[in-house]
Amino acid sequence: KVTAAFDLPTSAALAEVSILSSFESRLMQLENSIIPVHKKTENLQRLQENVDRTLSCMDHVISYYHVAKDTDRIIREGPTGRLDEYLACIAKIQKAVEYFQDNNPDSPELNTVKARFEKGKELLEAEFRNLLTRYSKPVPPILILDAISVDEELEVPEEVVLEHLPEAVLQDIICIAGWLVEYGRNQDFMNVYFQIRSNQLDRSIKGLKEHFRKTSASSGVPYSPAVQTKRKDTPTKKVPKRPGQRRLREFPFHPLTVQPHESSSCSLITPSAASSSRSL
Image 1 (cartoon, rainbow, N blue to C red):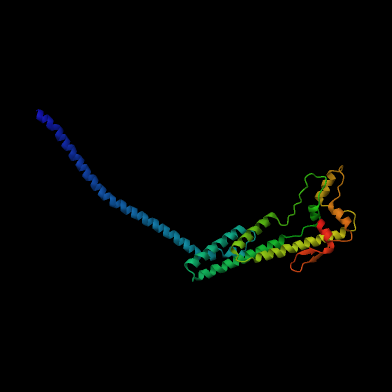
Image 2: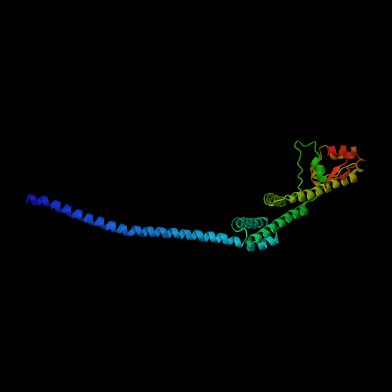
């Protein structure tokens, strides 16, 4: 009986070992069958990713072949009123030019996008000229006198703002000029700016000369509306003598003389009026 009692746990242990061995054997069989499936799944996923990348690259490449057609309408209509959209189209064209130059320099598409890029650049230069021509105006003589005059009764002189160009137009001109400097491959637009702005400077100086001529026989100098309003609001103060008025009295018979310079379109003050120009 004692021997039988000792044999019982041994039999149970042997049964457990047999069960565990069977379980281990089945687990190994399952693992051997699952691992190949898992590897195949990984390979399929990798293939799928490669296919997606390939399709994406193909779409990207194909898009370069459609750039000329997609940007044709915007380039033909020009940048007026939609400068940001126009510059974005030119950026697409430029990327297409770079792609074909690097990958297919003999393709006819390269010539097409190059021609479209040059057309876009020409229209940008034309817009630059048109904005300057349309919005550049000579400065009125009264504003020039106000800018150089000082009110002796004011502790802090009032600053006279001369708006040569509207702010929105100025920002467009700056944007176009920046693009032309970086991608335009020439500096012709700077000559355009010089010619137009120097012409307006010449007109401003001639207008000031004409203003001096008309007021040289008068004892007073007209003020701008802003100065007149300020003086009416302070009737108890002593009216200060303005530098412009003193200049007219000191030089009644020597109005500002302007002659064109030989080498530029800007006008210069002649030596006969040097003393008047120094006071300005």
